[in-house]
Length: 223
Image (cartoon, rainbow, N blue to C red; front, side, top):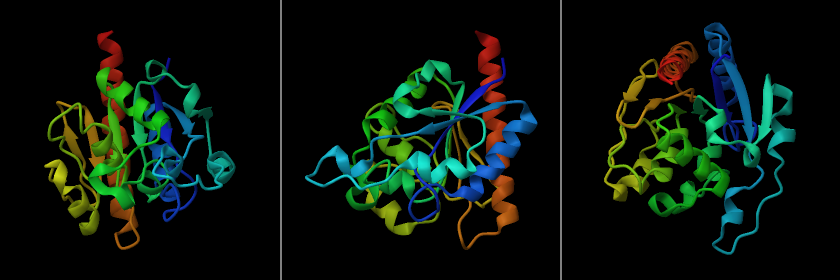
């Protein structure tokens, strides 16, 4: 059975959800490697987690449906045991839709289904890949269970400052580079931003997917 890699969506578009340009390159590289993409769609959204705010009206599946390929599963119906790896694309969705990192920084909360998924993958030592702001989501999710993960969160200096109380210094790399934290099985890259070369950033995305999928296959062979 091919490696099943979950792709966590937060909406459509860089500012309000998932960076869709990254999705195309993730799909392409997974298909080349012989993997199976499993689209993960959350139902709960960050502001409903508390702090007295009202959840926004946002149907992530309806937003993303035009670009989805392969299996699609509601996040509250997936078990980490059913996945061999997880990829969290960039865009601002991870810090505004799946969490309130953009406003709460290091004290942010993550929606329960997303938190459970990330922790479930981590404790099973299954590879997690992040692009851009997806790295910040994983930093917050793992802050109580691991020390000083090595991870990329992009070039947002303000966000780096907000997360500094965690005592973690995010790694700065070029758009084509992939950082691997072997101890925590984390693969990260800066992803596709408006001011970076699309060709170079896409190369970084595909390198991350290829490295993560290779780790998935090695893990399956050990079982």
